[in-house]
Image (tube, rainbow, N blue to C red; front, top):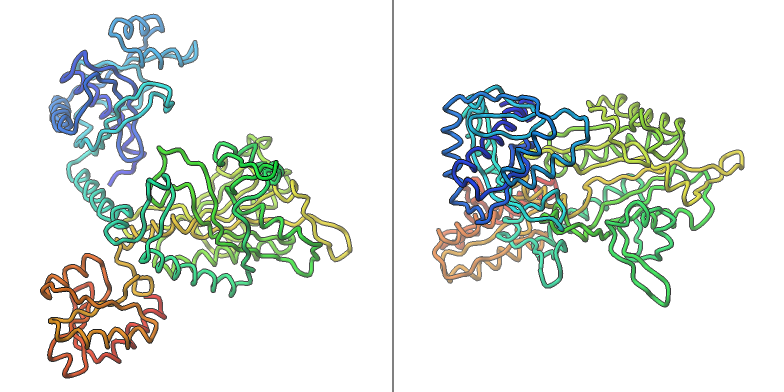
Length: 580
């Protein structure tokens, strides 16, 4: 399949064909805005007195196919600013005029024509409509002009295009699979979490089943943190605003923070990050080189004001828990600490069932050193430590100049899920800014006061985001060790219910999570219900099983076997311990 970069000219041309089709069908009722290619397709924004409805999409799509079949040539020609102004003024196109007025004087202007449609455009197209191949219009959404809520609301039609129908069909199948795995849909169906409007957007309520999974995730992480020499800490959710002034958050991060609150004539602020709290713990007493590195870890809940338009289930929220850690160390220790962070990331991937990943090393833009905190020497040392560690560990990575945060370079690990989508989760970041702002020190071996290096480290990014990724990766069918219900006993009739309860108790005594379905449904309906709930094992108990002290075991794949209760208990416990 072609890459998105290869497809950009094709999709840009498809956007022109969409606008062509809209004008053909709806004529003067439409004002045109903008139509770029995007990662997975294209869109075009329109203002229409009578709004588009979903039933319009097939009509527009058919018209686009007619235009593609005509093999229309894409032709561009220079145009003067006055000519362009006259062209769009006559056609009463205010958004096009707004675009024109935003182009600096002296910049060349080009009008591109395809068939009967002409548009002001910088270029980047295929030669003819026939090269567009296959198109599909996907959805209609609202979009403020220029992304400003004070501007008019437009309608955005999204679509995608590929050179061949086969490639388009494969992409649409991928989209359908992604929709089947959507964590918001599965979260409701499996009763894992909800977002309650009475409480507010972007705030997550963990239901009992989701809470079980979260507890298992966090239990594993705390054990791993302890094993790797981290100290687990807890810091307040709200702190004095002066602290955030010192950290710089009220300056460079203010728009993402909730507003201050007044307590006894002092201002306090909900924390958007955990790092200042960990710094205060480090700074609470004089530190010696003998106790470095200090590794402080916290499952710390933070609050950020995300605009409603970007909120998205568990993946973009306003209150979330970061698996945060901050490492304070000497320069001689830094590469060892970075290596342990990367190794920790590999352990997370293995334990939670991911076998593919991508790594990026984000460095500062060498042409703009003034935009970054820290000296040239500090940046060279930090970038060198990250690069040396990845090279020594033989980790393939992409070098990304200009992608560092202003306070230091970083390593990002993007895991790849079951259907090939990358997710940005793990990050290991240097920070030159906060140690300097908070005047952090340690007593070196020669008795002098030195400034420690500081590293931010998150593995999941946040509990919420990682949980959302897990739901989609497994399509809700969690491995046995994470499944909120690991097995359910299905008595065939009411006569077997007492035996089912006995089996449940025997497995429960071993720490296993087992339910009994004693409803009046027929057996096949019970099995179907549990399949929809994605329970790993269904244990059918009928007359024969009661007499023999066994259960008929059915797993999610449909495989069946009759087993003694004790044997099944050992099997299930083994999977839970092995995290399968």
